[in-house]
Image 1 (cartoon, rainbow, N blue to C red):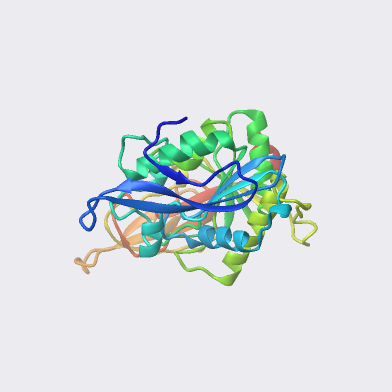
Image 2: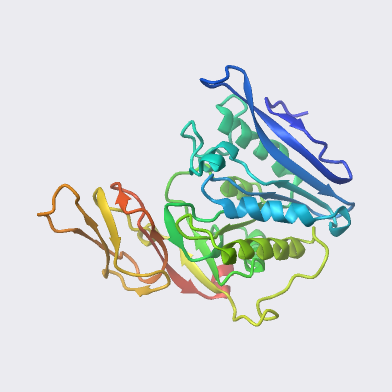
Length: 341
């Protein structure tokens, strides 16, 4: 028995389709004794892999939440070969407020591996790390870029050193059937959910769908169909996965943004103006944006130059910008063989 302050009102081994919740203890100005309820659903029908699917890691990224709920509405136990554990929304309070961070200011996606003795976000991260991860083979964490950036709709992974894990993650990344696959690094601190899962040897499948918090029916459909196809690829959902070729689409384009220079930061605080578009090719040293100064109309804008060559994969979507904010992601196109290497 793992010692955790979280109360799990669900039996992960029960057959069929089971609805429950995690109770995360908390205390605030409105309630000295309280719990944050995090819904959890288990669909279990016999032998096969266990796959953990999560949405709403950040509260301003609803595609994962809707994708999980749509999946669960229609899913029957007989559709599953193994066990599917779904947490539709990891950050319910933030999702209701449509904010990236929890009301406490905590970034849940910087809370891992967590601590049973920490604040609520760390307690929940600890539960995911020590209770849920050991049950699973695949870990799915669906993101949709949030309000802060416009990005190409992509599936993603970190550069993984272990060859077999890397190969399986490249295959899982392709199973989303997105037009773009991105290999990226962390530039805003450690403690990511996917990073902890990767360190524990899991096959991690993640995404960034959407643009600036503006969701479309096309974005939601990409999340819905991509998740189903990925789960078929994993073997937990019955049925054959489809390939991009079967859908009449060209191979996905694989991008790599694995150097700090690929993530230009705002040199000063002000109002950000991009001078290039998503998917546009830029060269090292090219002027790609600038920072304007509201209080100093006499001052010329501060230029932002590319520090590497490649395609614009992401652009900051909020004009008001603080010094040090990431404003672009520049990624170079690579082959599948390079991704595997």
